Length: 146
Image (tube, rainbow, N blue to C red; front, side):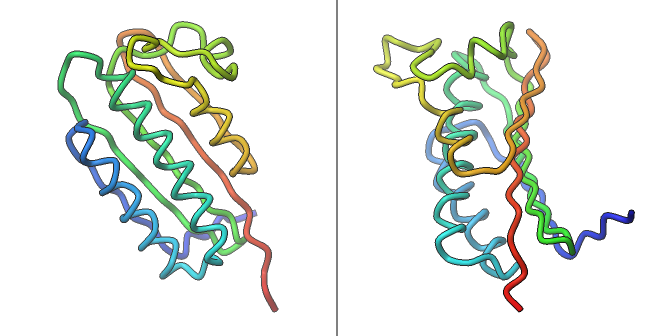
């Protein structure tokens, strides 16, 4: 079965906290022109915000780097969002995905980023290696409104 991409965008930006808003706006614009319902756009903007914040706060702790945000819309109705960093990576993905777990307790982090992403997406996949960075893939299936 062919996976036809109907629209896509890829942006790379410095891992700075002010760019989390940029990522939200880019995702919102892309999803809007891709015909995604407004309620789903709000959910996916929140999921993108959590993923990008994780990359900035945890991936690049005390160092600089870039975050890549890639969004794709498929003819099947699937939305695929990938957030990548080349930061410190995650040693124990299963532990990191547990609600309330955080590597930045001194910053009063709630440790709910992955739980929020999972609540708004149909699928969340995390690939990571210590010292090599992390890729978070979010998927959402949009029903055809015919």
